[in-house]
Image (cartoon, rainbow, N blue to C red):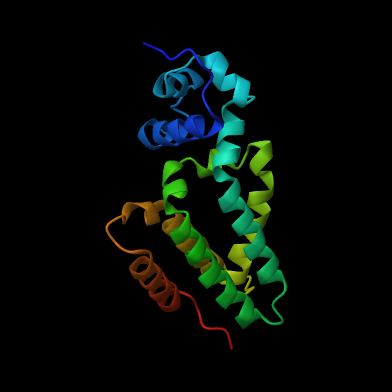
Length: 182
């Protein structure tokens, strides 16, 4: 039996995160989120304008950290420093928000087309540029993109590892894969 009282913002966010984890963002409807909470779709819409607003709020902390990383990369005085900050910063972000990132596995390209996430594409391009050592060579840029995408697609798969173990392994991978900057 559905509860009658409107649900809290947090309950809806938690239910949406659970549904996104099971059926993906695209595969989840507002009605399914409402069912998970035990309320009406209207109650969900009382708290959120639409499903995109729920996703935006769920991802807001990770996006804030990504924007801060972008600022730190831009402030670096040289290419080698920018590459190091980009590598360590992205790994830290991926580890810290591995649960949130895992919710969206396989759906990043489509989600980046949404207006609320358009600026993420620009940040991602600058991140790739920094990891590639600002090189225009295809090999360096492809390597940087594959590493970023691979980390984002898989970091949520390693729940059995501590944050420190995952961080150490990902940084070791980046050090081996990225071309050194001279």
